[in-house]
Length: 610
Image (cartoon, rainbow, N blue to C red):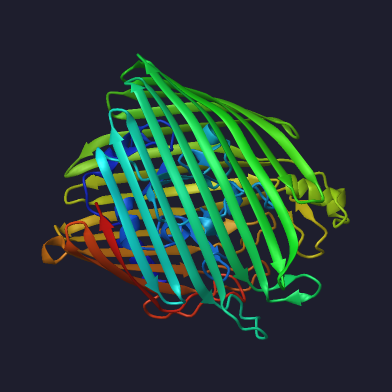
């Protein structure tokens, strides 16, 4: 425990340099731009410079460097990756990409496929933690809001090529332009790896389990006047994955799955005086097919579409009203059942500021689900700032609720031929969540920023699959709880050296009093960036630590520390060579029992920006 305490204290005295983080503009908390200093919710940001420096190809590996974010990966690139925020399941977290809800409705729970998201082309990620039913209808995990590269004035672009261990290679490129007429941006990436043997139980084939991903993403904006803008987003992702342990005619380790998602968003924004309006249509279609020994064993399709309106009214410099409507339809078709349903949401939030020191929000949301009727959720938040010696102190607090209706798959499974008592006799109802957090942040000189947050959240009527009798989906009648402390900090002791650190203590409890599975009680990240040689050379180290997680039957999971090294060198203006070594110390561990993780792996590449 000594090193955990030391790292926790370090998190309270270190982090990345810049102007005060409190002045950063964020959007995700209330769906409108706000300075972080006025935001009472818990939110962290990954920008393009940090994503580029870390160098990870898979986005979930970059996200796990943030406070309270844990990931369980089942066997390498392209394999199932469950991302948990503050100990909540991944399907309780909403993921938006350029405004598109990229949830996969064809899966057992409506959730994003984190393993299919690559970092190429991504400009910024905002992570909003805790129940966020108010603005998004989301559940207890929170919201991950991803935006792709924003064009600058003129024409800009980038190309890169990378290769490394496990036969891994990636080619990526983007080009964009901006003018008085509007803007356009197109990005593409092609990633492939031979991988490694996904499971320790695969002793017959013992083959490598590879993965291929091709992603296209385009944005187009037209600005006919200063107050009117129309936009279009198009996205296509294709993933081909190999894995172990599936069933066809007989059990086999010769398994594969194909994933395709096509999505688009059309939006019109208009502002006039104190009012602003945004009207959007979003649609995504997901197709998945599974193969056993080369034969198709299962296929499913999902579709998610929505019409949304977001408006705001500014009554003055310190008083604003945010309001909106979300009309959503989801569907799933796996050949045995074809179901769809609607859910309509209506929300408003009042924001007020007093003396440029106290900022309060209060909001209410009403959702009407076609299968489960209506539900009301709310959120209250506050931030209070005061000048202190050598800096500024911020006190913040949030209380919020959310809910999750049983997925179409969960309902259909319990009604289908594979379910039996007790699941077949269980009528599922919605899960409800409630959480609060209290925190303080201090911003001082030399890029020093310290933050500490206490959080507590609960999920009632949790839905879970019967892992004892395998009868189907059951529902508890108690509460599942997650509480803990988040510490984070940034510091630049000298102009070319910056430190970052965060530590999360997360205690979880299922309704029967046992710890919730796959939730590390201790998570920590420590990063160092050094810029010698007139900043042409950049060197970085990142240490990730996980402690005290258990499986579903209470068996302890591996504790581990993973150290990554990254470097880049600017050869000419715009041209850089870069490389990294992941798992530098070759740590041997499992995040999920019987699933292998990558050993020491080196990668190198070249990047040109114009």
